[in-house]
Structures are given as C-alpha cells and as structure tokens.
Image (cartoon, rainbow, N blue to C red; front, side):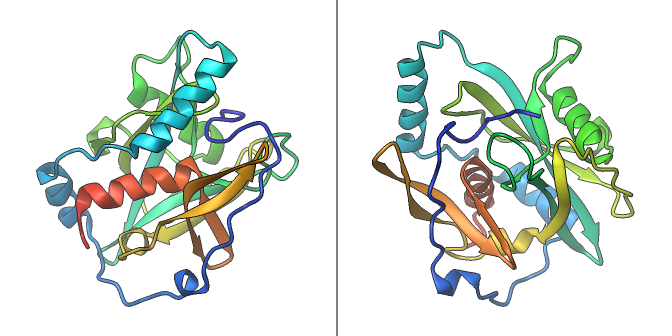
Length: 230
C-alpha cells in the first residue's frame, strides 16, 4: 500500500462537510448491466486542471524527475441489482494519514505485468478480495499526486459473497457504499482544507460516519462525471 499517494506529509485540517451533504436523498439502484453500458458509451472525464497543477507544482518543488506508477482498485459488488463500492479505512497506527478512507491500491512492482495486475494484487493483499481480467470494466485516466505518484484507477467487479481478510498492518476496516450515493447531484463537492499556511479546495463528501476526501473523493467524482447520471 502506498504510504502517501494522495496527501501531503503534513498535518491537515479535514474539511467541514456541510450538513445538507450528510442527508441521504432518494436514489435509483445501479446494476452491473447499467454500468457496463453507461461506462462503455461515456467519454473519458478529465480531472480538474487546478488539482493537476497543484500536484505538478509539488512534484517540481521536491525535484522528483519522474512520477512513480501506481494503481487503485474501484471494486464493485452487486446485490439485488445494486452496485456497491468497496472502501477501506486505513489502519489507525499508520504514520501517514491514519484512519483515512481509501481504495485498495499501491505502487507498481517489477513483477507486475501491467497496471491492472497491480490493482488486482494490491486488493488481494490488503483485503483478501479477488477478481480477474474477465471481470474488468476498465480504467479511469491516470491521476498525478502531490507525493509523486501517477495513480491509475482500475474498475472491476467482485463476487458479492466475498469473505474479506484484512491486512491489519494496512487496513483498519472495510465497508461498502452504494455506487448511486456518489452519483447524486452535488454529492461530492469541493471543501477547503489547510496545509502549510495555505488554503486549498479538495473534493469531499460524507457517508454515515465516514469522511471521504482527497484523491479518493476526486476519483469518485471523476467516475460520477463520466457516467453523467445527473
């Protein structure tokens, strides 16, 4: 698992989520069949240029010559015709960003044949959930991060009857969110946060008692915009 694939190695003030965002609005169930058709027919969504610029500036300040390739897995389980996204809460003892919400993922290893294999391997290592290329939906555009990674989100379906086996060194807990929650209008919005005396705006949303923000929320926002449900 990446130590810092989506945030600065500094103390951050988490964004305050507006109260109206925590209320769950009526939503339509989203099935695997619906998603396959919608994703296949939708043009790729490009990330916010200002977010990309911030990552580029941070990398330039660090003097990093190259972005290191990495992948995260957007794993989808279907139950009763409705897709759910698997998310993890990082272990609370981790030095970097303990307890934050993320996708399973990590850097590309030399043994990985491609970015898809990285995402599949990392998911199995971190949460014990497996999939294969036959259940692959596709990938979102790679996203540069302030810590010098180029993260490719891989989307795949997993068996809804999976039995998780969490790596306690990496993962505190695993939970699911209906995909439709992320596709509600204005579900994911920009919120202010502070680092090194500066205020930045990042994507964030709340779900039950979880705050989903940073690159995780940015990736989910990109997916929602590509599907163009709203």
